[in-house]
Image (tube, rainbow, N blue to C red):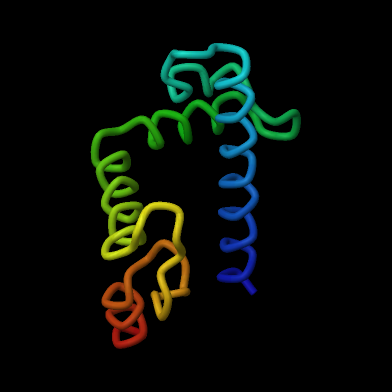
Length: 104
Protein backbone atom coordinates (compact mmCIF):
# COMPACT_ATOMS: atom_id res chain seq x y z
CA UNK A 1 0.00 0.00 0.00
CA UNK A 2 2.70 2.50 0.96
CA UNK A 3 4.66 1.86 -2.21
CA UNK A 4 1.56 2.43 -4.35
CA UNK A 5 0.75 5.62 -2.44
CA UNK A 6 4.32 6.84 -2.92
CA UNK A 7 4.09 6.22 -6.68
CA UNK A 8 0.79 8.11 -6.92
CA UNK A 9 2.13 11.09 -4.99
CA UNK A 10 5.25 11.12 -7.16
CA UNK A 11 3.15 10.99 -10.34
CA UNK A 12 0.91 13.78 -9.06
CA UNK A 13 3.85 16.07 -8.32
CA UNK A 14 5.44 15.32 -11.70
CA UNK A 15 2.19 16.20 -13.46
CA UNK A 16 2.00 19.44 -11.48
CA UNK A 17 5.62 20.15 -12.45
CA UNK A 18 4.73 19.78 -16.13
CA UNK A 19 1.79 22.16 -15.72
CA UNK A 20 3.93 24.67 -13.83
CA UNK A 21 6.67 24.53 -16.47
CA UNK A 22 4.10 25.15 -19.22
CA UNK A 23 2.61 28.13 -17.38
CA UNK A 24 6.08 29.54 -16.65
CA UNK A 25 7.03 29.23 -20.34
CA UNK A 26 3.81 31.00 -21.35
CA UNK A 27 4.18 33.81 -18.80
CA UNK A 28 7.95 34.31 -19.20
CA UNK A 29 8.86 33.56 -22.84
CA UNK A 30 12.54 33.28 -23.62
CA UNK A 31 13.53 32.75 -19.99
CA UNK A 32 14.34 29.45 -18.24
CA UNK A 33 11.02 28.16 -16.86
CA UNK A 34 12.73 26.40 -13.94
CA UNK A 35 13.55 29.83 -12.50
CA UNK A 36 9.84 30.57 -12.07
CA UNK A 37 8.47 27.26 -10.79
CA UNK A 38 8.10 28.59 -7.24
CA UNK A 39 5.36 30.94 -8.48
CA UNK A 40 3.15 28.15 -9.81
CA UNK A 41 2.53 25.90 -6.84
CA UNK A 42 -0.67 23.85 -6.91
CA UNK A 43 -3.32 25.08 -4.48
CA UNK A 44 -3.20 21.88 -2.42
CA UNK A 45 0.59 21.81 -1.85
CA UNK A 46 2.19 23.78 0.95
CA UNK A 47 4.70 26.37 -0.17
CA UNK A 48 7.42 24.67 1.89
CA UNK A 49 6.97 21.33 0.11
CA UNK A 50 6.67 22.93 -3.34
CA UNK A 51 9.81 25.05 -2.83
CA UNK A 52 11.71 21.94 -1.73
CA UNK A 53 10.63 20.10 -4.86
CA UNK A 54 11.54 23.07 -7.05
CA UNK A 55 14.99 23.21 -5.45
CA UNK A 56 15.44 19.51 -6.21
CA UNK A 57 14.28 19.93 -9.80
CA UNK A 58 16.72 22.84 -10.28
CA UNK A 59 19.69 21.01 -8.74
CA UNK A 60 22.54 20.19 -11.08
CA UNK A 61 22.49 16.40 -10.48
CA UNK A 62 18.75 16.26 -11.23
CA UNK A 63 19.07 18.36 -14.40
CA UNK A 64 21.97 16.18 -15.60
CA UNK A 65 20.01 13.00 -14.88
CA UNK A 66 17.00 14.24 -16.86
CA UNK A 67 19.23 15.28 -19.76
CA UNK A 68 20.83 11.81 -19.81
CA UNK A 69 17.41 10.12 -19.75
CA UNK A 70 16.22 12.31 -22.60
CA UNK A 71 19.33 11.63 -24.67
CA UNK A 72 19.02 7.89 -24.05
CA UNK A 73 15.42 7.92 -25.27
CA UNK A 74 16.44 9.76 -28.46
CA UNK A 75 19.65 7.88 -29.25
CA UNK A 76 19.79 6.14 -32.60
CA UNK A 77 16.54 7.64 -33.85
CA UNK A 78 15.97 10.18 -36.59
CA UNK A 79 14.49 13.49 -35.41
CA UNK A 80 10.72 13.30 -35.03
CA UNK A 81 10.69 9.50 -35.17
CA UNK A 82 9.86 7.22 -32.25
CA UNK A 83 12.36 4.48 -31.55
CA UNK A 84 11.08 0.96 -32.00
CA UNK A 85 11.74 -1.64 -29.36
CA UNK A 86 12.90 0.90 -26.83
CA UNK A 87 12.59 0.43 -23.11
CA UNK A 88 9.05 1.38 -22.11
CA UNK A 89 9.33 1.19 -18.34
CA UNK A 90 9.47 4.90 -17.68
CA UNK A 91 12.46 7.15 -17.18
CA UNK A 92 14.48 4.63 -15.21
CA UNK A 93 16.85 2.43 -17.13
CA UNK A 94 16.51 -1.34 -17.27
CA UNK A 95 19.61 -1.75 -15.12
CA UNK A 96 18.13 0.42 -12.35
CA UNK A 97 14.93 -1.66 -12.37
CA UNK A 98 16.94 -4.88 -12.38
CA UNK A 99 19.05 -3.72 -9.43
CA UNK A 100 15.92 -2.75 -7.50
CA UNK A 101 14.29 -6.11 -8.17
CA UNK A 102 17.41 -7.97 -7.09
CA UNK A 103 17.60 -5.98 -3.86
CA UNK A 104 13.96 -6.74 -2.91
